[in-house]
Length: 181
Image (tube, rainbow, N blue to C red; front, side, top):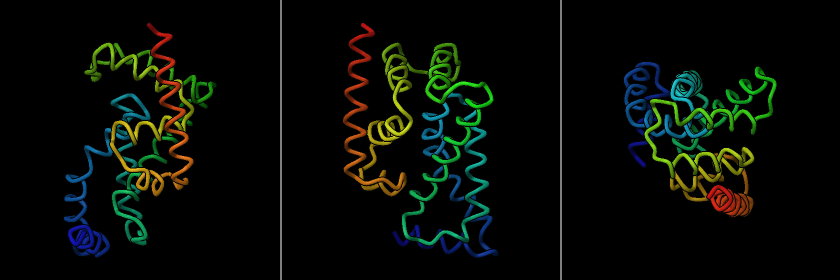
């Protein structure tokens, strides 16, 4: 915790901001990339969104109030950037967000950046059919192994609502996999 406080102090100090930001990048770049990648699916899009996320973090670090953990704050920015990105792409293609997500997943098996096997591909297809909030909650809980309290802080939703969303998402995924076979 003191390391985080020190890093925040350095990030908010104009003299040490750039060096501290490089440290921040090395600490969180990969974790944020994979979170974003689960939302936007494409490697190239995830890179773009990650870059936008870190630009926002760099520009707004002085406004960080320390009401939450630094990672939770950055995770919220990354989530919002990714959602904004896919909403914009879906709108450009004149389709709703769920249809757009399914289009992305349908191209996943030909994506040379995708390293999963057939079971992983089926799981990704199942996740793509979920409504956006359920998809976010499922990914954060299942893949990122986050606690409900962390997810609540990031998504600004009650823990009870998150538990319900996760439970419903799991049931939908199970049904999708049963129907798929």
